Length: 163
Image 1 (cartoon, rainbow, N blue to C red):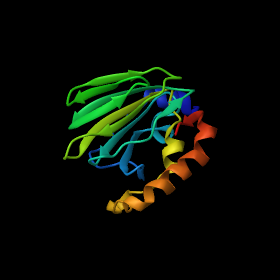
Image 2 (image 1 turned 120 degrees about the horizontal axis):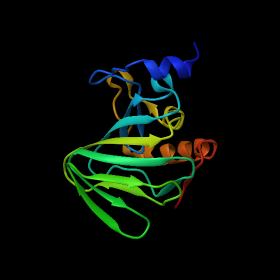
Image 3 (image 1 turned 120 degrees about the vertical axis):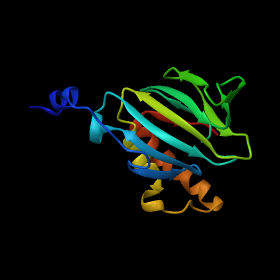
């Protein structure tokens, strides 16, 4: 039976706190659904975004992206304006759209981030540094290195980072 056939018949369960985790852009991303358990159909991760955290403006050329704010307050830049998001907000970002987000509160924010189709987990695994086993967040000085690493990995995943 192929992976596709197995995937289509298997229920996937990832307990709280489980899944490969990476620090990137000062945020902690924990992969819940990716190639390892659901193939390239769907990718979902939980993001823990500290105050001031979030990636720079960028474009995904291969995937749709969606955000659901679980906790906190986040500003989402949609290429022209800042959208104020709070817990319970949902955003869909069509492929090819400029976007970024930033935690604008004094408390950490938690988001679910989904990509359709999947396969984007490879980007986060390659661009981030391990946050597994409660590895501490890299120092703020690491942010520029995160961006440089992301830029090196981005092109193979159809991503474009803007300055």
